Length: 140
Image 1: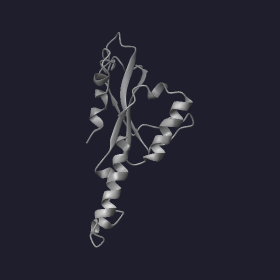
Image 2: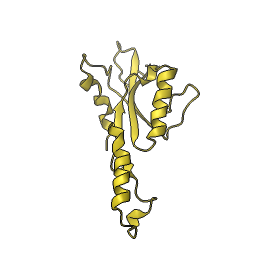
Image 3: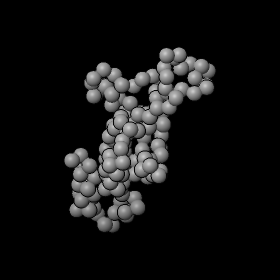
């Protein structure tokens, strides 16, 4: 339901806009400048084909106002010691941001727009709210 704010803002603009104003130019006004929905999908990396198709459908329906933050991981690699990655940590974790403009790969996953390395294992306890904190850096 939250993504319906974008069409509502557009409708309000069209109903209230002064056509002689420079803001009436569609190249200037974009409702996504006022509203963006950021969704935290921690398990996006592990989505199956059906889940990826549904996610891409959401991006088609709301191309400019929907963003998704998810957690990605890689093996820690050869530079882990130089980067001070803890010896018992087997992977490096990243918070990634995708949106409707990101390139879709052959496996239906999108190439992240932004990728920020996290300081360690990001899943905390069993509190869903705590696990969504990785998305905070992507808010304006």
